[in-house]
Length: 166
Image (cartoon, rainbow, N blue to C red; front, side, top):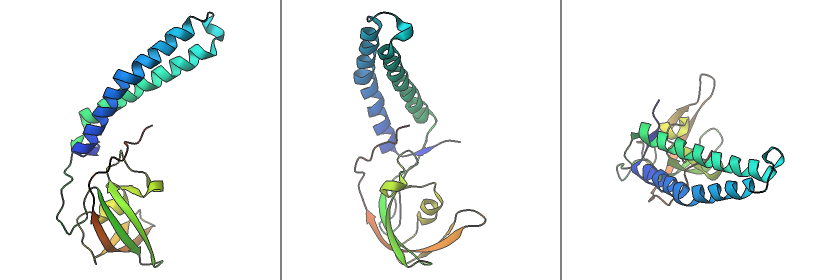
Protein backbone atom coordinates (compact mmCIF):
# COMPACT_ATOMS: atom_id res chain seq x y z
CA UNK A 1 0.00 0.00 0.00
CA UNK A 2 1.26 3.47 -0.86
CA UNK A 3 1.04 6.37 1.55
CA UNK A 4 -0.82 9.36 0.20
CA UNK A 5 1.36 12.44 0.61
CA UNK A 6 1.12 16.01 -0.58
CA UNK A 7 3.94 17.87 -2.32
CA UNK A 8 4.40 19.80 0.95
CA UNK A 9 4.87 16.54 2.88
CA UNK A 10 7.51 15.41 0.38
CA UNK A 11 9.32 18.75 0.67
CA UNK A 12 9.37 18.53 4.48
CA UNK A 13 10.66 14.97 4.36
CA UNK A 14 13.44 15.98 1.97
CA UNK A 15 14.39 18.85 4.31
CA UNK A 16 14.52 16.46 7.27
CA UNK A 17 16.70 14.01 5.29
CA UNK A 18 19.09 16.80 4.37
CA UNK A 19 19.27 17.99 7.99
CA UNK A 20 19.89 14.47 9.24
CA UNK A 21 22.62 13.84 6.66
CA UNK A 22 24.41 17.19 7.01
CA UNK A 23 23.97 17.94 10.72
CA UNK A 24 22.92 14.89 12.75
CA UNK A 25 25.04 12.27 10.95
CA UNK A 26 28.42 14.05 11.36
CA UNK A 27 27.64 14.82 15.01
CA UNK A 28 26.66 11.19 15.68
CA UNK A 29 29.80 9.87 13.95
CA UNK A 30 31.97 12.21 16.01
CA UNK A 31 30.25 11.05 19.22
CA UNK A 32 30.93 7.40 18.30
CA UNK A 33 34.57 8.22 17.52
CA UNK A 34 35.07 10.01 20.85
CA UNK A 35 33.37 7.26 22.85
CA UNK A 36 35.47 4.60 21.11
CA UNK A 37 38.61 6.42 22.25
CA UNK A 38 37.67 5.84 25.89
CA UNK A 39 38.87 2.26 25.80
CA UNK A 40 37.23 -1.12 26.38
CA UNK A 41 34.13 -1.18 24.17
CA UNK A 42 32.44 -4.08 25.97
CA UNK A 43 31.83 -1.95 29.09
CA UNK A 44 31.71 1.47 27.45
CA UNK A 45 28.18 2.80 27.90
CA UNK A 46 28.93 6.04 26.04
CA UNK A 47 30.01 4.05 22.98
CA UNK A 48 26.85 1.92 22.96
CA UNK A 49 24.63 4.99 23.46
CA UNK A 50 26.39 6.88 20.65
CA UNK A 51 26.06 3.88 18.30
CA UNK A 52 22.35 3.67 19.14
CA UNK A 53 21.78 7.35 18.27
CA UNK A 54 23.78 6.94 15.04
CA UNK A 55 21.77 3.86 14.03
CA UNK A 56 18.44 5.53 14.85
CA UNK A 57 19.37 8.48 12.63
CA UNK A 58 20.34 6.19 9.73
CA UNK A 59 17.13 4.23 10.18
CA UNK A 60 15.05 7.43 10.07
CA UNK A 61 16.82 8.53 6.86
CA UNK A 62 16.07 5.17 5.20
CA UNK A 63 12.43 5.34 6.36
CA UNK A 64 11.90 8.82 4.92
CA UNK A 65 13.61 7.95 1.64
CA UNK A 66 11.40 4.86 1.29
CA UNK A 67 8.27 6.90 2.06
CA UNK A 68 9.16 9.41 -0.66
CA UNK A 69 10.04 6.68 -3.16
CA UNK A 70 6.76 4.81 -2.68
CA UNK A 71 4.40 7.74 -2.09
CA UNK A 72 1.28 8.47 -4.07
CA UNK A 73 1.16 12.24 -4.51
CA UNK A 74 -2.24 13.78 -3.81
CA UNK A 75 -3.43 17.32 -4.32
CA UNK A 76 -3.99 19.78 -1.51
CA UNK A 77 -6.47 21.66 -3.70
CA UNK A 78 -10.20 21.62 -2.97
CA UNK A 79 -13.18 23.77 -3.89
CA UNK A 80 -13.48 26.92 -1.81
CA UNK A 81 -16.57 25.61 -0.01
CA UNK A 82 -15.49 21.96 0.44
CA UNK A 83 -13.40 20.16 3.04
CA UNK A 84 -9.95 19.31 1.71
CA UNK A 85 -6.44 18.44 2.88
CA UNK A 86 -4.96 21.02 5.31
CA UNK A 87 -8.41 22.52 6.03
CA UNK A 88 -9.57 23.13 9.59
CA UNK A 89 -13.10 21.83 10.12
CA UNK A 90 -15.50 22.36 13.02
CA UNK A 91 -18.03 19.55 13.34
CA UNK A 92 -20.91 18.85 15.70
CA UNK A 93 -21.30 15.28 16.89
CA UNK A 94 -25.08 14.90 16.58
CA UNK A 95 -25.44 12.12 19.19
CA UNK A 96 -23.70 14.18 21.86
CA UNK A 97 -24.36 17.75 20.72
CA UNK A 98 -20.68 18.63 21.18
CA UNK A 99 -18.45 20.48 18.75
CA UNK A 100 -14.83 19.69 17.92
CA UNK A 101 -12.35 21.29 15.54
CA UNK A 102 -9.89 19.22 13.50
CA UNK A 103 -7.36 19.82 10.78
CA UNK A 104 -7.39 17.24 7.98
CA UNK A 105 -3.81 16.17 7.17
CA UNK A 106 -2.03 13.23 5.56
CA UNK A 107 -1.15 10.13 7.59
CA UNK A 108 2.46 11.14 8.23
CA UNK A 109 1.32 14.30 9.98
CA UNK A 110 -1.70 12.91 11.81
CA UNK A 111 -1.76 13.45 15.58
CA UNK A 112 -5.20 13.18 17.15
CA UNK A 113 -3.96 14.62 20.45
CA UNK A 114 -3.22 17.87 18.63
CA UNK A 115 -6.43 17.84 16.55
CA UNK A 116 -4.67 16.68 13.37
CA UNK A 117 -6.66 13.83 11.83
CA UNK A 118 -5.59 11.78 8.86
CA UNK A 119 -7.37 11.93 5.54
CA UNK A 120 -7.39 8.12 5.74
CA UNK A 121 -9.08 7.96 9.18
CA UNK A 122 -12.83 7.20 9.20
CA UNK A 123 -13.74 10.80 10.14
CA UNK A 124 -11.21 12.40 7.79
CA UNK A 125 -12.27 10.21 4.88
CA UNK A 126 -15.95 10.96 5.51
CA UNK A 127 -15.47 14.74 5.71
CA UNK A 128 -13.44 15.21 2.52
CA UNK A 129 -15.43 16.87 -0.26
CA UNK A 130 -18.40 17.88 1.91
CA UNK A 131 -19.69 21.40 2.61
CA UNK A 132 -20.86 23.48 5.58
CA UNK A 133 -24.31 22.41 6.77
CA UNK A 134 -24.05 18.87 5.46
CA UNK A 135 -24.55 15.92 7.75
CA UNK A 136 -21.91 13.26 7.21
CA UNK A 137 -22.18 9.62 8.25
CA UNK A 138 -18.95 8.17 9.69
CA UNK A 139 -18.58 4.38 9.63
CA UNK A 140 -15.72 3.33 11.92
CA UNK A 141 -16.38 -0.42 11.72
CA UNK A 142 -19.37 -2.79 11.67
CA UNK A 143 -20.28 -1.91 15.25
CA UNK A 144 -19.41 1.78 15.50
CA UNK A 145 -20.91 4.58 13.44
CA UNK A 146 -22.03 8.15 14.05
CA UNK A 147 -23.17 11.32 12.29
CA UNK A 148 -21.54 14.75 12.31
CA UNK A 149 -22.70 18.07 10.95
CA UNK A 150 -20.09 20.35 9.36
CA UNK A 151 -20.36 23.75 11.08
CA UNK A 152 -17.35 25.59 9.64
CA UNK A 153 -14.54 25.08 7.14
CA UNK A 154 -11.42 27.20 7.39
CA UNK A 155 -9.10 27.09 4.40
CA UNK A 156 -5.70 27.05 6.03
CA UNK A 157 -2.31 27.30 4.47
CA UNK A 158 0.15 24.66 5.48
CA UNK A 159 1.60 25.95 8.75
CA UNK A 160 4.62 23.70 8.95
CA UNK A 161 3.21 20.87 11.04
CA UNK A 162 5.98 18.41 11.64
CA UNK A 163 6.18 15.06 9.96
CA UNK A 164 5.52 12.51 12.68
CA UNK A 165 8.75 10.90 13.85
CA UNK A 166 8.94 7.26 14.86
